[in-house]
Amino acid sequence: MQAAGTKANPHGSGHFSVTAAQAYGRPVKSLTANLAFVNHEAQLDDIQMQAMRGKVAGSAAYNFGNKNVRFDLTGESIDLANIPELQMPHLQIGGVGRFTAKGAGTL
Image 1 (cartoon, one colour):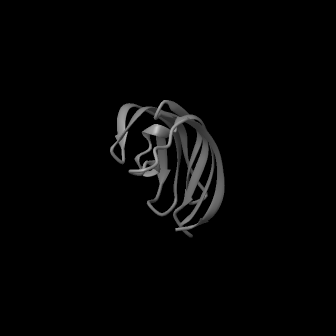
Image 2 (spheres, one colour; image 1 turned 180 degrees about the vertical axis):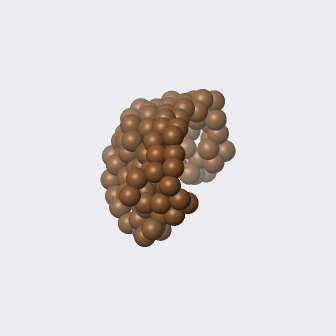
Image 3 (tube, one colour; image 1 turned 90 degrees about the vertical axis):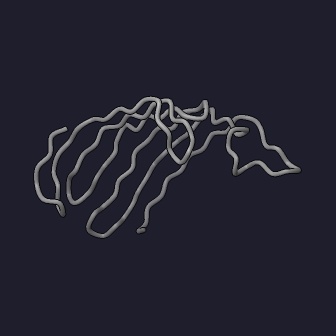
């Protein structure tokens, strides 16, 4: 990664890769993305994540000035049986899911 600028307006770019991690108590096999700081934003492009036997790909950005967030993500082969929030005592959810999520707004 190469970076310059100020805390309020950083500039730079790089790439990161994480393997064998945990997020919110759940295993993440791998996560890679290109990172850029430009126009008061942190931008993640070419996001590739493998977790829960599935894959998530896309892009996301956060603007430090106006706290705006935007994302464009797709997921495929998500093992629904491994998502505790979908499981209830009298109803067990299984199967394989896919999603597309695109949005923007402020935090």
